[in-house]
Image (cartoon, rainbow, N blue to C red; front, side, top):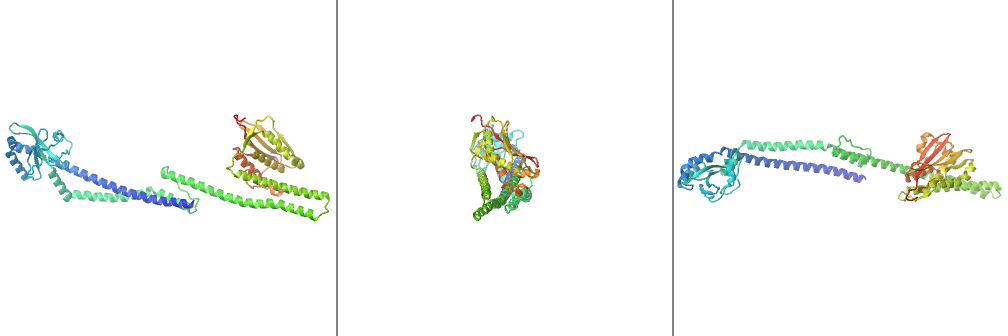
Length: 497
C-alpha cells in the first residue's frame, strides 16, 4: 500500500510538471498565433489604408488619359500618357478593361496581362457606395490578390464602356516592406508583443502555482500518508474537482486508517485468544490430571471418593467439550464464504428440545427451566444448527447466572416480521456499562472470573449468528433482577411453505 501511495505522490509531481509544460507550450503557441494574427491584420490594415488613400486615383488618371483613350484603348496617345504617368510613379500598373473585365490594353512595359480577366464583381464592389475595404482582386499579371483602384471609362471613337484598372500591389508591397523595415510603430509593436509575452508568462506561472497549490498540498499529504502518517488529512475549502479529489483522499485515508485499526484489534484479540485458551484449557486439564493421580495413588479409595473424583473428571471433560464446540462454532462463523444452510423448522419444537437437553443441569442447580410459547406458532427459516448453538449458549449462560430457586424461561411470540424468541432469567443481571461489551469476543463480566464461568465466547457467537441471519441480538438486563436476551427469526417464505 505504501508503495502505491508513493507512486501516487510521484504521479502527482509528474502531472504537475506536465501541466506546467503544457501551459507554457500553449502560451507560446497562443502568443505565436496572436502575433501571426496581429501581423496579418496589420498587413490587412496597410492594404486598407493604401486602397483608401488611392481609391480615387483611377478616376483622376482617367481624366488625364481621356484624350488618349478617345483615340483608342491601345492607341499611341494612350500609351504615351501612361508612360508619362509611370515616369512619375514607377510602381503603378495601368490596364484598360472591357465591360466584362477582360484586359484589352496593357499599358505597362511588360504587357503581361493582355487578354486576362479581372473579376467584375470586385470592380463593381469598389465602385459601389461605401465599399467595405479592402476590396481585393487578382492582378492581371498574376500573383496573390491585392488592392487596386478602378474607374469607369469610354474608349475609342465608338465610346465603348470599360474600366481603367490601376494595380496598387507593387506600390503596396513596396510601402509595406519599407514600413516593416523602417517604421518605429512596427518595432514598438514587436517589442510590446515580446514584453506582453514575458509578462503573461510570469503572471501565468504565478496564477498556475496559486491554482495548483491545493493539488501540491494533496500530493504532499499522499506522500506523508505513504510514509506512515495515517492521520494526515487535506482541507476541502471548495467543492470543485480538486476539492472532490481531496474529499476522496480523506475518505480513502479514513477507510485505510479504520482497517489498520481493525487489523491491530484483530491482532490484539488473537494474542488474547491464545492467552485465554491457554488458561481455559490448562485449568480443566490440571484438574483432570490431579483427580486421575489421586485415583491412581489411592487404590483403596472408598466408593464415594471415587465417585466424586470421577464426577469432577467428567465435569472438567464437559467443560473442555463445550469450549471445543464454541471454538468450532466460532471458526465456522469466521468462514463467511460458507453459506448458511437455511431450512424451515418449528422454533417451538427447537425450544422444547433445548430445554430437555438442559433440564437435568437445571434441576441440579435448583433452577426452573420452561418454555412459554404456543405450539401453533408459524415455522421460521434459518440455519437450524447455528440457531441450536445460539439458543444453547443463551440457556447455558442463563442457568449459570441464575441462583438456586430462580427461573429461566424461553418465551416465543409471533410478530409481523417473524417469531421472537427471548431467554429470560431471574439471575444476577449485568451492569449497565457492561451490556454493550458482553457480546465482544473473550469479554467476561466482572463477576465471571471469580465464579470460574465462561470463556468469553458464548454471547459473541450468538451475536455473530444473529448477524449472519440479518437479525439483531437485543439484551435488556438489570443487576439483581435478571436478564432478557431476544432475537427475531423470519417466517418461511410463502412460496416455500
